[in-house]
Image (tube, rainbow, N blue to C red; front, side):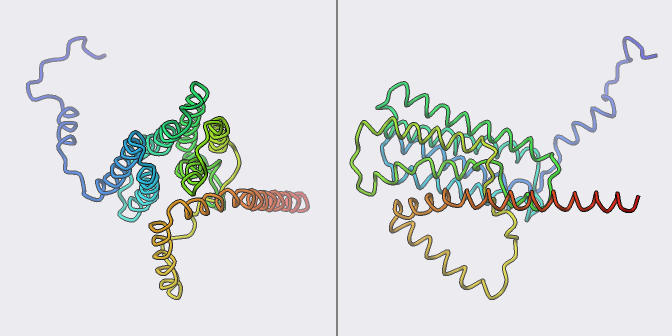
Length: 281
């Protein structure tokens, strides 16, 4: 039976001492490095919002792209240095919401959606909400058991890709298309479409199973391709992003087809295993 008033312990209990000791333990640098990358991505997203307020669309687009690149790196860096943590995962989700939900919505609203007044704001708001819901679903799905091939796919369009493709109307206008106030409503509908794609069950390619190693004969060609992509992006940013965006949207039907193929193969394998069991019985 526990005493209602425990005796006074001037040194504190053993558990309290352990908690205080744990609080002042040193944190390995490998646990900090991935979070630094995530914070740099967050800085890029916040900078994109500032560029939108100043109508510097090229810099706003560049900041979103930089945030997407850093977002793809922080997880890989964490796995490479074995610095994954629950804190890093939570920070990454919060950063993604700002970078790929809030920032693109504000860019679109400052660029054109404000001309549709309340309808434009509703479209921007729903897009940001869809991004938040998509990230929450992704975090919950991490605990689910899936077949190995499922790592090839995302459920819905991932938030970094959604942020890049939702800005397609901005890319097209910067290519020389006149700015018409009447286009605000179609742009808002397009933003809603991308938002719904993010929260949909439609599979999209993830690229996570490319691996961390590259075959020796592919090293130099990959260097050339990477340099060419960077050069094109710097020299022809809006043309390059238009092609990349249209290519990504065109890949979604192929991802759906590949996903259905894997599902069909799993169903056939399960049916064959069940038939073997019945035959043996």
